[in-house]
Length: 140
Image (cartoon, rainbow, N blue to C red; front, side, top):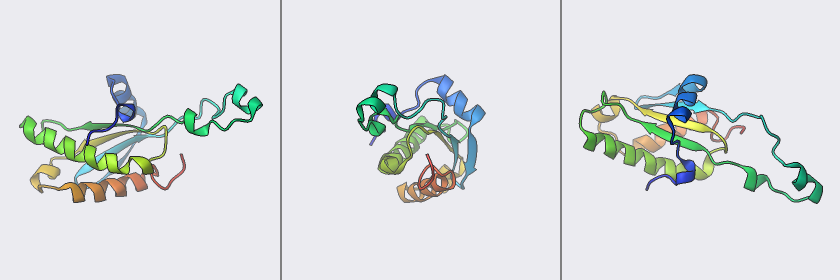
């Protein structure tokens, strides 16, 4: 299952920001690059406070996720695309648990192809990396 459009990192600028400003968490099959949310804006607009409406859920932007697989992982696009689909399916399952406003990039290592990983290994490792980065069960 592909990630919803609202949850995708699309532009080169966004990827660059995560790589430049974010931090890393390493696993055996992949590296997670994470950029926590900035607290530039207050969570409520002035009008919602005056009217007493609770707009916390409508103002929350979903986490944005990108997947990066180099040709060093495999020269064959078929293999890289299969890995990307598997990781996207695992991330789709984890979406409800992710904290809002985070920007994440999953960088796949060549060991993922050498070990012939399945979805279960990706799910387990991604959960571990997301907990370590405090994107799941952490503060947003």
